[in-house]
Image 1 (cartoon, rainbow, N blue to C red):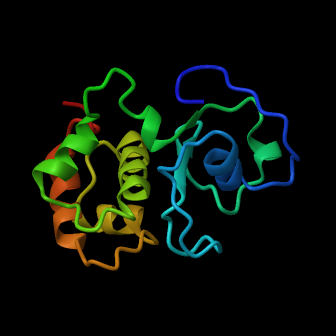
Image 2 (image 1 turned 45 degrees about the horizontal axis):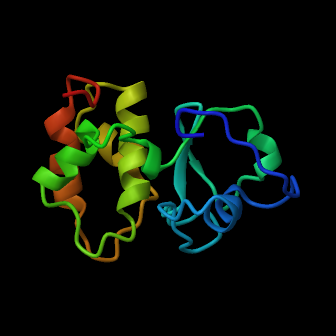
Length: 149
C-alpha cells in the first residue's frame, strides 16, 4: 500500500473503499455513488484504475495499491497532480483524486493518447463542476511523456 507493506485484520468481503477510509484513515478516495458509476473512489491496483467501492478487500490481498496519498511519497507533486494544478482542473476537488489516478493509469498504458483516447480513458469520471476541458488540457500537457515530468 502506497509503497510499503500494510496489513489489516478485516473481513475480506468489505469494500476496499471502506477499509481505506475507515481503518487506514486514507480519505482521498471518495464515496460518491457507491455503485461504480462516478469513479470518485478510484485507486490504482497493480497500476490499473480500480473502483474501490466495488472491490472487495480480499481480492486485492498481496497486490500493489496506490491511493492519492501515496502518489507523491516524497512530498513533491506527481507530474499528473502538477498538470492538474497548472491547468486549474480542480474546482470543488471531490472527484479530483479519482481523476488524477485515472489519468495516471491512462498515461501508464498509453503514454501518448490523442483527444479521443483521453475521452475514452477518462470515461466514467464524473465531475459535477464541469472541469472536463481543463482535465483534458492537463492530460494533453503530459501526452508524449507518459505522465512524467
